[in-house]
Amino acid sequence: MIHEHPSPLLTGPRQSDPQAPLRKVAQDLEATFLSEMLKSAGFGETSTSFGGGAGEDQFASFLRNEHAAQLAKAGGIGLAETIFESLKETSNEG
Image (spheres, rainbow, N blue to C red):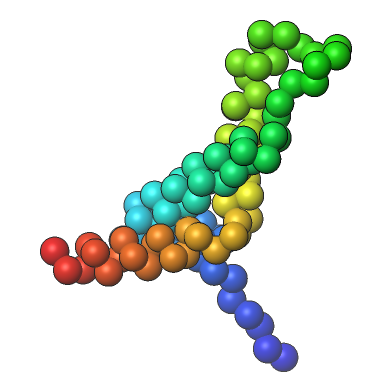
């Protein structure tokens, strides 16, 4: 029976993983990118009728950011892995 091991970005950083900060930064960057894409797609915009007013507008970004963070945590679009590899190479050069 073949067991596939999930990506470390999906399972989260291990306590002894020296690259955990790089993984966190990569995942945060992907979440930021996804949040901007969700914003461009109109996610979280208030409806013109029966909207929540100014309060809803102010808190919509929090909801969008949390959705983006969860998307990135679940594997996102693979951007975090690419960012992580790039950061790892850069940190090994110095």
